[in-house]
Amino acid sequence: MMQNRFLFDLNKCTGCGTCQIACSIENELELNTDWRQIYTFNENHHPDLPVLHLSLACNHCGDAPCMKYCPALAYSRDETTGAVLIDQEQCIGCKYCSWVCPYDAPKFSKTNGVMGKCTFCNHRLSVGLEPACVALCPTGALQLGDTGPEFEPGHIPGFPETDIQPSINFIPLRSARPRFSISSQNSLNDLSTAFLQISTNSKSKVNLKSEWSLLVFSLIATTLSAFVTASLMSLVTINPAIFLLLGITGMGISTLHLGKKFRAHKALRNWRRSWLSREIIFYTDFLLLSGIYLLLSPDNQILGWAAAVFGFISLFCMDKVYSVIPQIKPQGFHSAQVFLTGFYFTGIIAGNPILFGIMGSIKLLLYLRGAIILRKKIYPRRLILSFFRIFLGFVIPLFMFYFGFENALWLSILSAATGEVIDRGEFYEGLEIISPKIKIETDYRNQLQSTAVV
Image (cartoon, rainbow, N blue to C red; front, side):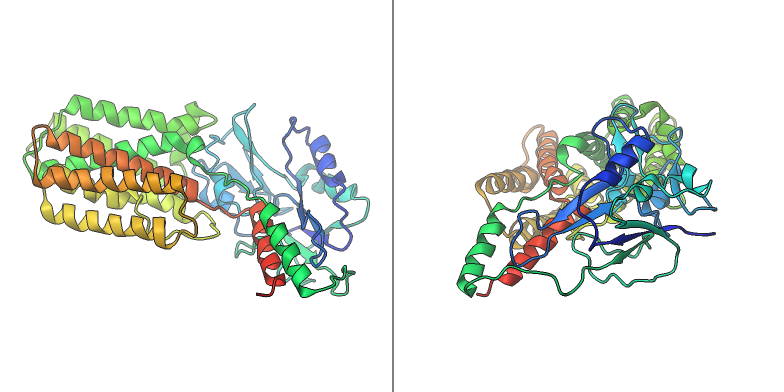
């Protein structure tokens, strides 16, 4: 297979946007949707840092994560040109491909409810023409090359460095570039400090507002898994009708973030590689086994434990969905992980002091580490949320556990669940997913800080 690739000369790009316009016209994109974007490093023109522009679209990576993790298998590669393409008839609009792409290439169309991205102008490549962005670049900054690594780009400000083999080479900036002179080091320090204060922070593409339905679904799945497990460990009884109604409702709520809700079944297709597909498969099996266990064979312990195992496997898959997303600061173990929460809830529901104590302690320590030790800023809103998260999620369940009153179980579950909502919400808001814009801001701030001598 011949793999075409872009060749980008940082010395020639003026940031004029012609390539972006050419792409939009050639592919007849809807208003405010751009498959190619221009990113500027040092927009504020700090005199001791270079100003450069990056013209980036899909890099048609050799190990493309969009194709690897798409649950609907909507992505494929043209073996002739090497272009990574998306079949919009198969896309379910889950946006997961945009999460795992460090170059922010896939774009969601609100009009069509599916993802779209740069096709490498595959229709032009197949007849021997260059992509529109390359053909119309007025300075020759953007060119088309082959797979040969003719240039070693090194570190390019704003370009995420990954191991997914992006099909783009760079001609880096010339080392001898004009710089403005600063009269004194103190002036440079003052200027760098001022620029740091006005530099902005981009919002992550995953946040609580956009993913609230997934939060609700994960909370329902965690609670139901805990109830099934607790019923096998204690005398807790489960109303089958309410259980199944909640389980099916949770599944329905989880589809609300999809652009094509009636294509949700296609998310089962990539079970070999996608944790999202595995999550759905194991959760569906969990509901089926739980329904059979509760309705037809409530005395069958083997069937009950099989349902519990499938439930916790589905929780494990939910956590793994986020583990493959490229993050600036990988969070590792987090107190909001639903696999841990499932055991914590089980300890509460089953009245098991060992499970309750161990899992509660682990989750509390993880939360304190994330909320205090690893946080550079503890501002009032964060302190208030942390207080309620700890009080509702741990203190009240502990009090109810050892000094229980009437309806203590349901009060404990409600209080713990509220604490988990806060924790899960902070988890979403804390995700720092790598993208060119965020990488530019990060590199810019790092270089500004390096110019100031303490």
